Length: 377
Image (cartoon, rainbow, N blue to C red):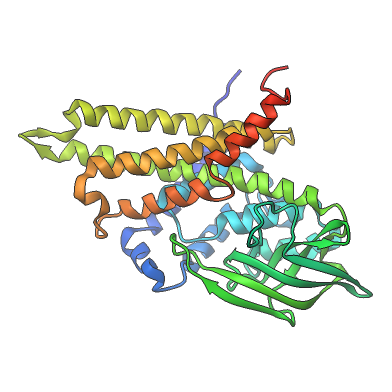
């Protein structure tokens, strides 16, 4: 059995690598440092839209390419390799995928073609202050209304909220959870910018008795399942992004140590340096295997809770170790802001902690194994 990627999948990855490597440069990324500008390259976003790369997992009936989650993960890996200033994870994985999976057909036909064409940017609100469980919202409450539902509360640090036209939001409704597509221009919606170490634009979104019409309700009851489904795929997407970022950081360090000389020989020939780079390589290959194991199962609709925890543990530990090792072998150059490595180290640490650090997922994995839900029957 061939466990490698298909020719079509390789072509999708190659196209993403070509566009992103050509269009994302250290000089362009520097324009967003320290929040000098919103970290959103709209020209690059348009190129990705025109190439169909934002829509690889979207059905053809909505303007997509009709592929699956594996193909999208390959694109996200390349986005991580360049730390591209575009909202691929938030728009494609956290918003479009759950809408395609769970939204009523009328809502899908109205929203997804616009999102695929680029006239509508989507995102999802997954964070609340003091609440780590996106499937059990506590800070936003919904109330029944004759025309739909009314939302009140605050969603914290919503990515690209001010740039998006609509946000996927979960709210507590009586004893259940409802999920809606909130239009950012609706009356009662206000936003406060939040600064992130990655310089991505985020905002706290305050909802003051905001009316969401019935046509924009994704699921009125039982929204916990939607949010669990969404968070699992967003977590896997972060692992793919982490894989690309870690791989680039390692290759940057390997290139640097091959050229940098001390005592008349390349630094790479020192045994300690060689060992550190070998450890990085092993970490990254383990992350690659665990990530695509989880992605392939999720793409097939198979339960992947255990595999996803393992992938996120590797994403956290690999990002942590690779960021330290690559900076170490660079010496002072590794933290020089005129050199590109520091941005990758920021992203590696960000992805390490996003949607739960390694300790969180390790605890969840341990509980699952203790309950007899192991890897093998």
